Picture 1 (cartoon, rainbow, N blue to C red):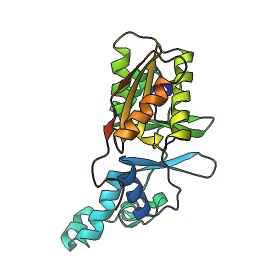
Picture 2 (picture 1 turned 135 degrees about the vertical axis):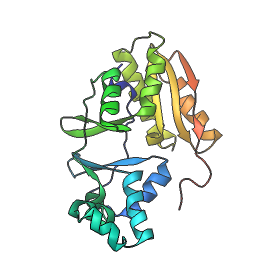
Picture 3 (picture 1 turned 120 degrees about the vertical axis):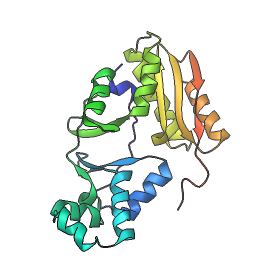
Length: 227
């Protein structure tokens, strides 16, 4: 299996000028822990994570450092910008690692472990097309453990299911991950209610080539989705 088989598509992104409050709202609304920062052409410039936002919030909460802490810590312009910045381009981790759609899962896993990161953007011809997180990998490995093979038809089925859900159900596809192997579909991610869960299942069941559907969708916790 490759990145294209497990990646989350329809990635939630922000622009370099997006404000901190806007980014925090997106993370809460969509139940995600980071967002890529992209320019108008779709090139990945950086990533803003919960950790980046927490450093920003801690600075607002704690105020100025004690004089003796400053004495030992010194003055770091880059750290100052990240802790005081108000826009994505000021607090993001710049120039993040990216991968192609054809990278095998075991190589992605090693990459995440080596660089101590939780996710990696997937690009095609320099533009963002998806993102692979640790949870995506675990689901992919669960499918791979059955020794099932992912074919071109499986990838077309996956694309068709996501398109049907996006076009006709009202369910946010950025919260979903659809795994397809030998026509067997696994549904993962979060939905708002039982009706949405069934809508995604019906969309999968009605897609040509689907042999079975394993619906593992959970529900968005109460309070997530609004500030």
